Length: 408
Picture (cartoon, helix red, strand yellow):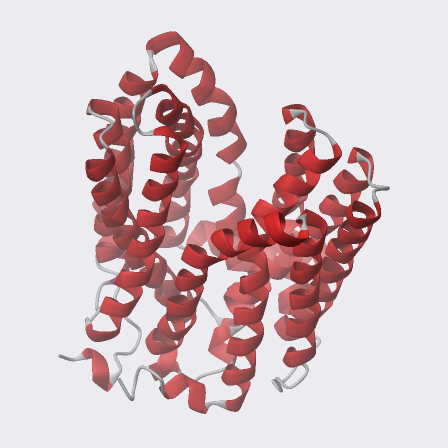
């Protein structure tokens, strides 16, 4: 356990960890608060969809630019600046909702600003850890981040729901805005060298990142797989799942329990992984993430609450194993000066098909029935998750270094 907490002895990492934890606490509450803030202004589902799309579209559009900014100007600088932008935009939304002056177009514009900041921040967050701890502490550092964040995924939405009921959605969003600004303030304590001024320009930086991405087989093979996997999850599980719940004995409460079981799986797995060796990160990661197909198969064959919760819990375990394996592969094998750009291409490829899944599976469910579509989606998910293991570069990618604690 002492080695598991060793990263917190590093002053830079400790400040980053605290800032990220505060940031994530607000983020896990924001989704619920924003949804009810929009519905406070307009009860139209179309209005809510407009505001949510206003956030997600800039995330996809500006991810590559975020990777370039992080690699050019320094990851902590980009995280700080985007935290300030996100905090101010959330506080502006909160102020409009609290004062009763908000209109949907106000919320859409401010949420788009938040989405743009998120796009710039994500590659920087993903790429900064190797600058904060020695290489032998990469695994415990990732898990020290994952354990409390997974706990917040379980607690955050529930706390947000209570805040919305007790003090209103506007004030709940104000709490989120303050957490962004507080995280930016704490990050001023992180001291890491800024990157050397060697950039040839944004277009050249993007081209260099793409060349590396395309030439690194394990990287593009896994990203291509996740482009399809995320489309399936967003369409079959996240979109058809709630509909199936309302049409069966599961109900809304049952669906909430299934989602909570998955979050508990994230948390439990992150605790287990502290004690488990991880010498082939992508081999075990892709085998484990195939478990994400289980909830779709279980709900497709027989939507029973207990079985759905067990399947979702196992899926959570699998996703967490993959998440750690992927971060170790990226952090140990991608050159530091290229890391944020590599993550930005990873995120773009992984996210780009999500809207397609969200749009396509509804009509498929209407045409062929929700449960048959869920079964096919579950089978497809398992097959696509295992397919990258055909590539030796994925199957046999080793740890670059193995810490002493990983040899048992």
